[in-house]
Amino acid sequence: MNLIKYIFSSIILVFCLSACGKKKAEETNMASNVIPVKVIEINQESIGQTIHASGVFTTEDETYLGFKIGGVIQHILVKEGDAIKSGQLLATLNLTEIKAQVQQAQIGLEKAERDFTRAGNLYKDSVATLEQFQNSKSALDLARQQISVLKFNQNYAEIRAVKSGYVLKKFANDGQVVGPGTPILQINGANKDNWVLKVGLSDQDWSTVSLGDRASVTIDTEKEQNFTASVVAKSEGVDPITGTLWVTLKTNGIPAKKIALGIFGKANIQPKKKTNAWVIPFDAVVEGNENEGFIFITKDEKTAEKVQVKISSIAHGKVFVTQGLEDVKGIITSGNAYLNDGSAIKIIR
Image 1: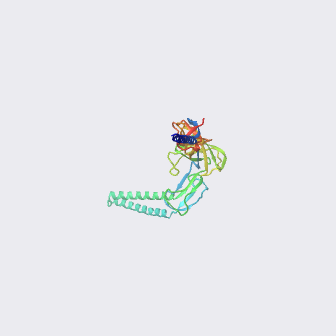
Image 2: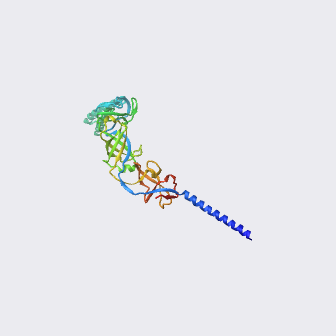
Image 3: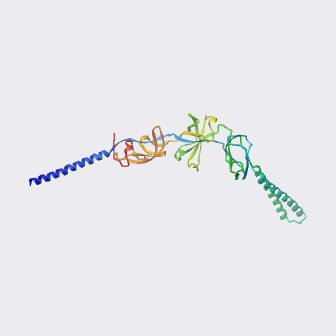
């Protein structure tokens, strides 16, 4: 009997020791899965952020020139980069067809004049009716208007410079068939101070920028020097090609010889309008791109939660967040590299 009691007691002791071992192992395992982190409090601030943008230089007085009528290009007398003077002949169409049309209209006019004279004489002799006389007068007026239109078109079968300046682009060549109004040449004025920088912006940045906002501009030809600029125009719609909105910056002090059409420039715009944003350390962002990112927050100080935020800009090791942190008091800034959504955490004070 004593032997049975001894064996039974031994079995119970083994089970108790095993259970205690498992409990300690589970506690140890749970403790090892808790990740120590640091948390900082955040508050929304009204800030004047810098908007970084880039674009290309253009001019304020660019003009596209084309023929009023369609036809075959006879000669283009200038090339890209040429200096031009106001009234200078730049391009001509082959006039064979238009001359034939003018001659045909001239013959029609002469016939209409003869018919009108004959109808007038017959009407005086009471041979022709008043209606016949009036119809001949209408035919004469119509013939005169027709030849007037054709001669006008003949005069516009050539392109002349509307102002002194330079040829920026040539879009066609001799012998090419073009339609009415098709751009053949792009020119700008001779004024050296009309260069502007046209930059694309996101919808949020575009709404922040106002006319008159100051900016600094850098160009590749003068990398070590910043030039002052100001916003002089804003687009009223999205560019169908780039899908962005744009603003135009008027630059000051850039040497004319350092700029040409299409040269790349960078701008830092300082909007007068303030933006509400959360300013967080760069290390708090675990992943993201230009406008969006992910950070970890905690609401109960025990569990990490991964949230998506909208980033307006990044500067000097700080990230400016405009959306995604509403009703959030603290974000995780250290230890976040080891976290997943729902990870257990321990806050290090």
